[in-house]
Length: 85
Image (tube, rainbow, N blue to C red; front, top):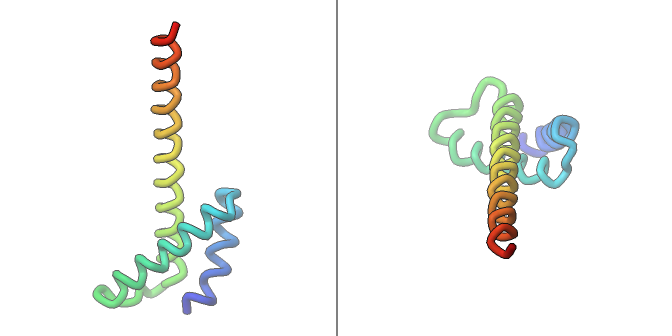
C-alpha cells in the first residue's frame, strides 16, 4: 500500500511546497508514523488522506521551525555586529 501512495504523496507535496527534498523527508516520516500508529489504532478508512495530512503537517512544522531559527540567527548576528562596533 505504501508504494502506491508514496508517488502520489511526493507529487502533491512537491506541488504544494516546491521542494523535493522536503517532500521526500516528510513522506518518509509520515510512513514511519503510520507504521507506529496503525497497528494499535487500525488502518484509517482513507490511508492516503491520513498520510498526506501527516506529511503536510510535518512539512509546515519544519518550515515554521526553519523560519524561527533564521529569525533568531539574524538577531544574534545583529547583536554580534553591534557588540563589535
